[in-house]
Image 1 (cartoon, rainbow, N blue to C red):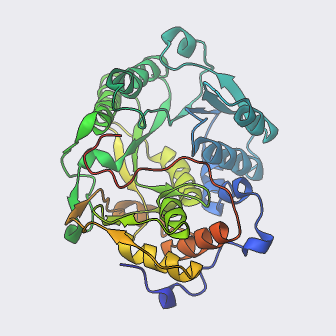
Image 2 (cartoon, helix red, strand yellow):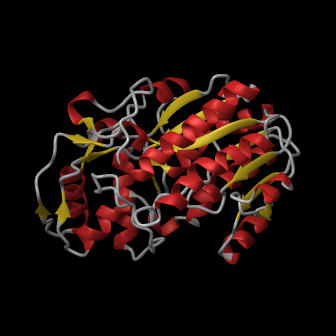
Length: 354
């Protein structure tokens, strides 16, 4: 299933590859609605776990939106920063950085207090074989943060994996669906949500929980994984036959706007694009752009990790960049020799072992 391209004319919001700016510039461009939201937000913004794939985008968008709004605030990015380049890049954007191991309660205690906290820390890949660390990162770290920042409002990132596999015919899980988590990663993510829920109820912490599924940019994401395989003429496994996707710039914009929705008990929101995409159809479309044959293996199963984003779309409107446009731009990026982050999503994993 692909969206009808004829219905998407006039929504080409990404520039041509020849004039494409630095991807980080593109991803962090705030919408007028984000500028308005950050203009209304009081005080500093603390982003915990900001060194990951999406943290720099969200932090820089918050910085840029605050500047446009004329709002003086510190945007503070907190991470272990195993990459010095990542820390220096954030600093060059006017974002204050702090090194911190969030598992160490004493280090968390020393962090500056801020009225708004975005929680992006977590562990997924490498969980199999080191399950205790995954559980510690995904449950003990939230407890540390809630204990220390009980006077703040918290927006916490989670994942659509907490729902488990959903029948494709139903169009994706909704926020009210029960958890059917499979594997230590997804189960620990349920634990993370329950910890935030507990502290929100016990301490009255306004909290929003964002279940993201999946963010994509030109250098990372499900579309990049599929595009690289098609480009290299590698067979595509279609057993996980369907997926959701949202441009990372849109995901960051919607998440920043959702800070204002933090509530007691927590406000929960699925965050993804409106389309249910077919791995087979997307791969064929990528093959058409590349002029390459596409090879498939296995057979589509009737269920997948899918989320229904109607609630978010009703609040924030449609993404700026449609799935069809993102597919086209990922294809152009790969065909033109654009690099990637070297971090496969492993979206095809069905048993929850990452």
